[in-house]
Length: 216
Image (cartoon, rainbow, N blue to C red; front, side, top):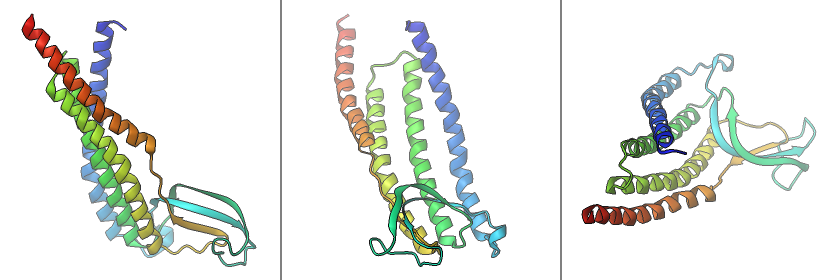
């Protein structure tokens, strides 16, 4: 890739991040207002509700007859299927679960927005031909901390939120168990820590670059 092509790609990424920054900033303002307005107007009739709640949950499916009660783990029925992931609970009647889900999404959105803003600043200086600067090293370091914070905060919020959601809703489908899910992304944590280490290497390279400029 030539220098001109690299510069065009850098500017393209910069513009893309600029668009994401505007979009996520608007969402960060509109989303909490939407959650509040919808939460205050949840209708009593389930058919009229549109309060679908997303929660990270684990699930187990047992082979039980339709009339049987929901079995406790290891006590009844054969385990047919199990897993965990983001589940959508349709038209929940509890306001707490709706607000909890909304607050979690807002917190994660703000972390992501900060990461986008920091990354865009990095690409802005790169597009201007200023690669080796102390500010860029600090931005790479910040991005690394943001990645680490995301991969620690997200599963913790999801776990606490899913416990509160399950406490708030009524779920008694025969043969199906739901429980709070938790999954730590080790790869994401390693990537964030690697960026923090890389920022130190870039800082040393920046110092060498400045010494060469002074020598010339």
